[in-house]
Length: 226
Image 1 (tube, one colour):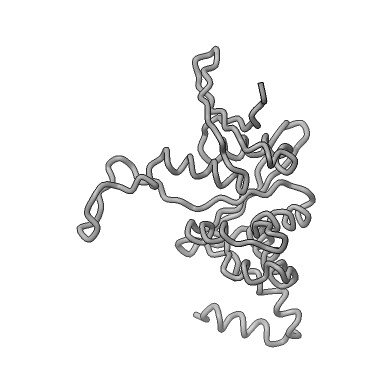
Image 2 (cartoon, rainbow, N blue to C red):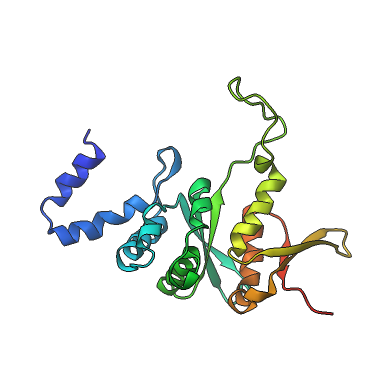
């Protein structure tokens, strides 16, 4: 068998260097777990991430350590309109560090990245969510690390964290549970009104993506002054 490096070298040797870069560069930006192969769409996203790293000088250094573990295009909003959104999954530690990075004009690097990706993908909304592991109630730590399961790994904590990832950098300022007439409950998430201009058009996307990821119904709103 030929190693991956040997395979790439073997097949790229006959191409000009510029072409070789175009063909193989994106694969650095997608790292699938357990040897899974990326989908065609994931490779497309990975290539766009790499292209941005090469072309956007103000966020080049911030993007260097960023890679995705999955990318998925999903249906959102009114089915008759056929609107799509893109969910990017990123390793938890990488996204946590990424949230602390800022581009020019004190704009969070993630805001700049999302804006550029949305241009590349014809205005489809792009959301970035950390890859987290949920540990069940029966979780038992190994002998090396005794103690209860971390709170951050419970189902509730992970679902709360997904809410924060979806709306970043907008802050969640309140939550209300609404009981519907049919007996079901819906969580209403209130967002910081200072971001209404940038976020207002994405509220339905946030709700639909959250439902896809957690199977729970949530509505996102801005507080109304009474």
